[in-house]
Length: 233
Image 1 (spheres, rainbow, N blue to C red):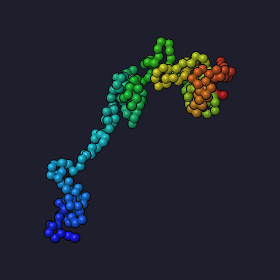
Image 2 (cartoon, helix red, strand yellow):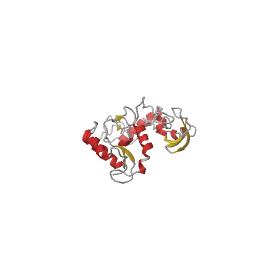
Image 3 (cartoon, helix red, strand yellow):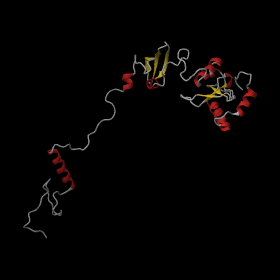
C-alpha cells in the first residue's frame, strides 16, 4: 500500500522512478550509479580510465637498420662493415681480408676478426696445442674439401670430414663453441662422410665407449685404414 503523504523519490542521475527500490537507495540502476560516479570524476578532474595505454615497441625504425650500415666498426675494432645483405654483411678486416659474416655474431663479440689463421692466430691455441677448428682446417688443407669425395660409408657425396676415433691421442677444447668435442691432429684419422653418416658414426662411438677412448674404433681403424689414405669404402 502506497503512502500518499510520502513524496515519490526520483533517481539522482536520471530522475526516474525509484519504485520498488530500498529506502536508502539513490539510483534506479547500476548504470545510473556508474554514470554518476564518472560524472563526479570528470568534475574532480580525474581521468575517465584508471590506466593509460602505452604503445609497445619503438617509434623509430629498427636500430639494426639504422646502426649497422656502411662504415660501422665492430666492438673489437678489427672489422669494418662494407656492404650489408639482411642479417649478414661483408666486413673488411684490419688485415685487409674481406669476408661475409653474421652481423649479430660481430655485434656480440663472438666474431672478432676474419679468422684467417695466417693473420690471426687461434686464441684458443696455447704453445703447441691445436684447437678443434684448426685440426679440421689442416685436414681440409691436406685432403681438400670433403665435398670433393664420396662418403666412405654410403658412397654418396660427402659433406664433412669426420673423426674416426681410431687413436689413443684424442684431444678436446676446454672452452669455445666446440668445447668437449673430441678430435685428432692426425689428418689420417678423418674420413669424408655425409652429414647423416657422420652423426650415426659419432652416436655409435658414444654407445660403445661414451666419452672414453673406444678400443673398438681403434682396432677397426687399424684393420681398415692404417697406412692408407681414406677415400671411400
